Length: 391
Image 1 (spheres, rainbow, N blue to C red):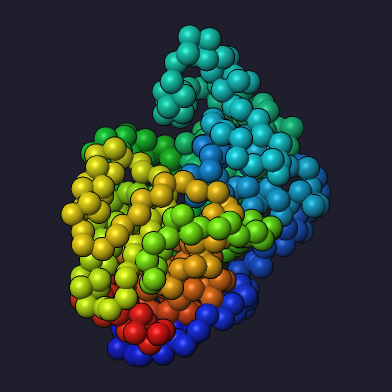
Image 2 (image 1 turned 180 degrees about the vertical axis):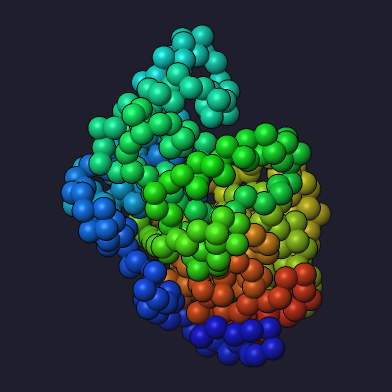
């Protein structure tokens, strides 16, 4: 049951939802999973596909694209030989073979020998033709490549005589102005090359209908849609989270601690909620920060709030399972998303969500409320309605 900001929530108890109850998979351009997409490409190209390379910049637990790449590898490995190629890997997944790009490229090896920071190599890779040629040579041993970030795709601009392998580009979201000046400056320098890489890819896939429309508006290219899915077995075991939870009513947020996620606004809204409800209301925030400055702002606001705000950082899958089960409501004040997997995860535990009606949220929310952006008062009211109706 999804409601807009003018309808009543009326949720009496938790009831688990299946993915099929939430996601609309009926449109012909929507593929139910990645193997179905690859089978479609195989029929269209009339070339047999046995080996697949997945390119992702950072294969680390805190990165959303890494979680998606991991799921892709798990899904595809049942039918194909799959490797993940990346600049950085923290060992969080044992589900697939991981190859470090820097360790297998001439310039990368030199930088490693002098202990140059990984971010230096990663940030300048787009302008490193020698190692891009090495990557292209490696990719030629695969039948198809799944490209998750365009900074890894310079090979798509090489002549066919050098690089003639097929690429599927995954559009997680269209790059928007960020909250960090350096990111925007770097994007203005690299944006033209990245756009050419995206256009030169053989097939395009978006992670939601809304990101598909954004992609078409930007590039004039149609794309398939393959929704992000949950990793099998990730939420099978719940840890005891009594040491993380102190309130009798619990709101949960899961994601990066970054300005566009609206963490400061979320704390402010929940602080106002705590003043109007009788229950001991608590906000738990799970995730890592992308900015020390912004994290300091969040910590300062959390300390000054009347309600208890717990910044638990990164937690295990078992702990996250326990938090989803314990939460009375899932909240997000994010103002830009390509998908937003935690919104889907929370509902699969029967936990209602209150989120702003942006991007893909209208596609994802079946249990909870969508609120018009920049209406924090309405957002607060929907939280209070649920806490009161759930008593």
